[in-house]
Length: 311
Picture (spheres, rainbow, N blue to C red):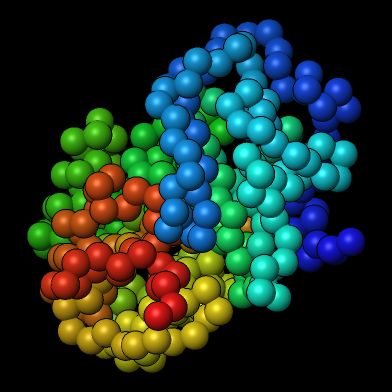
């Protein structure tokens, strides 16, 4: 029998002792405007997408999934083994498993132990975790978590900009305002409260030191982001699911990514190799560009989902 990586297995333990089918249904008002998406290969292939779901009282992520799809489980019902027949396991010697993200944040508990909140975007993706089983935050559920927050709680949003009066900072704040999300503007390093959502905007060579963003420089095993900047920040290299470098991108290249440290709120970055790249990232900061993507590189040629698909 295939053994799970210890860290992955620990995320899949369930604290619920009720029966498998009954667990998660409870009294209380039903959350509204809940969405459910099922994909594979880091969002590259959409298998199912729901509209706004009607829920039955207070539900868990597992009960919502079971009511909409055929699911098999392991580890006492808390670890999803297959969804509509597509199972985790080994494929061409690669480890593949199902992971879920609630408003763009990788689960810290099993699906049967996580309650669904108003406005949640629940995203299940089956992917290769040979490089890392920890992708702590993704951008593909935008406008979450800015709009409805984390675990039912909205967080204050702070846009930290290299140039507060610059066009990239203005574009990012305008997008949030259009969604009804108030966002304070600040200079770099002035928004380090762990209970705020931080959006850092600026050229990588100037923001890469920012608290929480440094892990992106160390690659996917440290941050979950499949891209790396050169030491001087002038080159951005997308990585494939094996961590291989397929090409390097230079001037006017931007990156939109999110990561998370420990239990803090996620940190998003709109950055690039230069000011032109940052402007491209800021103007691509929208649902149409980010939907179902773990992170995105933008350039004059368009947008590139990360990790990059191998040729």
